[in-house]
Length: 427
Image 1 (cartoon, rainbow, N blue to C red):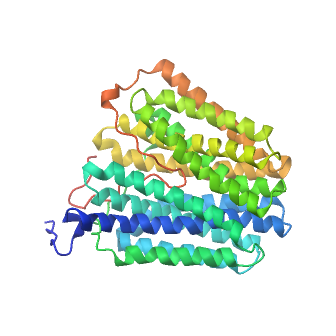
Image 2 (image 1 turned 45 degrees about the vertical axis):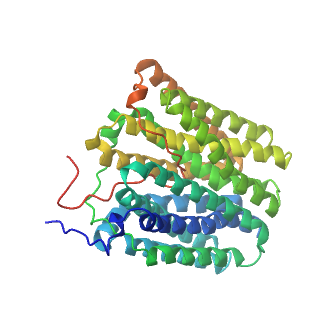
Image 3 (image 1 turned 135 degrees about the horizontal axis):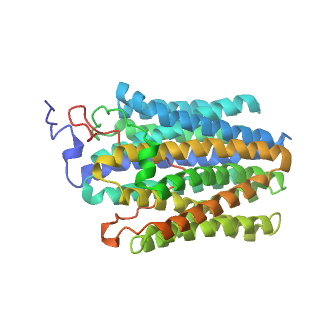
């Protein structure tokens, strides 16, 4: 029989301020991690460029990160079942600190590939743990707002981290040390929280065929945005460094990109709650393709113009992520939610691994600008697919749709890991 939690020990049963503080501990922890993560995303390609390494090495590091993320999607569930949410959260945070320490040893690209693969594994696992934990404890009435605050705080943390690149000595290990410091700080709120841990989860199944039957547009959106987001965030600093932009200019470019995510998602989400989301998805894909073309046109020109282009480009791509997830959830029954979220996460992770690997190979032949052309093709093909589905399939009535919440493709979709053993999800 399931034990009844004590009101003294289980903050999840407490109303008002105590629950808010407990939930905030996870959100603050992930925001702190985001600061260090943003700095390391910006630091690595710039440091490699300064040291004279071929940009292909930076591409291989992004591919290694993506491979680690795929492993994290697969292995996090078993880890949580073994030792629980809080312990896994702290272990994965420690592994991120270890990854940053390995980068700080010196400029050794092969070691950095392994270090960033470890980071990819850890950050993907952290998001699965944090979001499933929040989904479990947040009351239905505020869950949407909690997850929105979670995503916005992480996006803001990334922006802060990107901007810190302008303040560090690129020839020293200051950036990895700062990353380690923020990661260590992130452990404190979770380590001290009284937020009740969910019961050990059951395995979450991956059923891509079932997910495709529920929402082809949603699954295709995850495949598209896995490549779009990972390549924009991973290859933009590589390409900017190769084009000769300074350390400060790369920092400004990257710091502006999360602003586009926040600016564009809100109007896109508001509109998508009132009309068929597929119209908005098609518009976001078209905007991402056009912004990619503009990125080619303004390549190497005024930094201010390039910042505006990348701001729109990143914002449009990130909007596909949240819109596609919302569209898929609109079409799923309650009994499908666990398998659907797991399958969408898996599709996102597969694309996030395959597309950067493809771009790295093309970079060897065509140079660092190759990623822009690949992403234009992905955005255009997805937009055409959405239009095709609009012509063939009727819309879900607006009254039957859920409520849009802003999300970021830098954060994996939450997988529901919170079903207690005696209360499994419907088969």
